[in-house]
Image: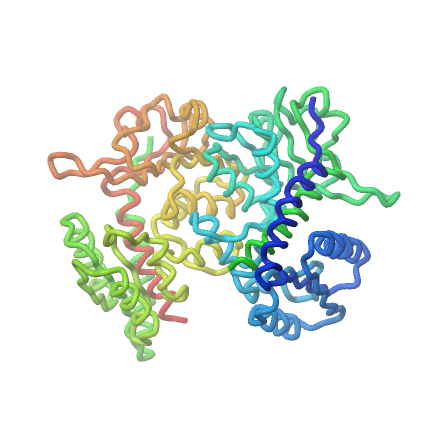
Length: 277
Length: 277
């Protein structure tokens, strides 16, 4: 069983990002990421700090826009202004959002060219249609990890558990584009284990702590655990019961240290891509 | 085995469409569909005539715009003009397209509010995100037929064969929204029959005459045949070998007389929806 090292993959991606930033700066462009934070949620604040640190380390300017207690109108106005600002190359909007507004509604006000975390439904559509677009970084991370681990995807049976707009659906579309046969399971799926045991690759994106156990995994399968569920003691666990699955799986991403660091690296890579125009 | 009567379903839908058109006309709006035809292909001409006839029968104005031999620029200019024309409520663009231009590129110039056959990638994205949008009428027809046949979709295993932007992918997204567990197969799928035999519902959208036989069908399954493959004698056959499958399937849509008429009816229903604004 291989424990996939997300931090090492992240480091390798960030080397390329650092080089890309240096090139842009030499040509007079400082790549800039705007992070809109419409909440004072503690976990969000922690995540934003980690993105800002990672951005600064590679030379990307991270502009944090605090909009705690904002209204929907104010939020949308800010996103439109950032979309029009030539000094901003990438825009992300953190959740949770103010009451009465959804991420899809917000996403529509992020220009697709700056939509580095694929929040605009137009980005999802372009992705589905096979046109150039930014996918949500987490969904990208799933495919990037599989490619770097040289997991065969062409003709492989891939099972995605979860159908969110930010992970499950875009991951399924990206894996389909890699010529995998893709099954999408979710809360209404009957006999989940019978489905997930068919997967040469199993992607867990449910958001329920340790929901998938040994009985859900085909022997030798590659398991990508997208879950980041907080534990009472302040830690983080995935959607997969890693200890139980280890004897069965061929490889698995740990939580933390798996999909998370790769996601951050890809977000920054997307900013460089956006800044290149 | 039930042979699903697509013409009867179409008729039932068109009764609602006719009533909707009457309401709109009484309020002073004549719903209008623009059909852009950038080809002199014979099969296309036949299909366009059938849409025009069906539209006129329910009181929808069908405006045929012949652009045979057009350039990409001229085509896009026309679509933009129609998108801006308040007298036009729905726009479709027929294939085949002039060389060097794809349906996705064309689709981007059809305003989403008038995109009654879901050709704009933004429509596909909105669909994926669960936002209001027009799906391609053929994909809608798949779900409409299943609902009218009272086929249980919640938790059902649905297998879609084909991953085109106009049928396979949008049908998969619509079926996922109906809480089905959806598997998308395609040309690179290994052991296709092993996958398709899992389907309580099997959607064939491959575009290869009689490609799916008895060995591909789970006993009792509902089979929706989206294929319309021309035969040498001027007829039409589906992607399913209907005669072979009949003893196995629970129900099947014939070709012709299955998905086709329902698609046309839904296209016209979409025009009414668009005209209501």
